[in-house]
Image (cartoon, rainbow, N blue to C red):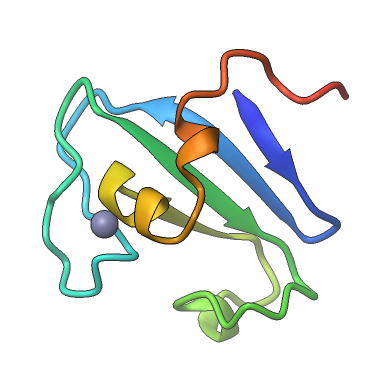
Length: 88
Ligand SMILES: [Zn+2]
């Protein structure tokens, strides 16, 4: 479900089906567990956040997963509890 959209960044709220590494935790810990709600950010070429790995994406979109702790720390807690997708 898309919960935030910028011209070069889309954020989905997802429920994990398997363990995942959180790209925001920074040390490749699998802090996202099955059943957890997490955010998936997709950055498109032109996005200037310096999102990890973007420069090596070869001009393709780059995805990053973010656990609920990191999303809360960075002020995105409201996206984790969103119940309605953004209008198209
Ligand atoms: Zn994290």
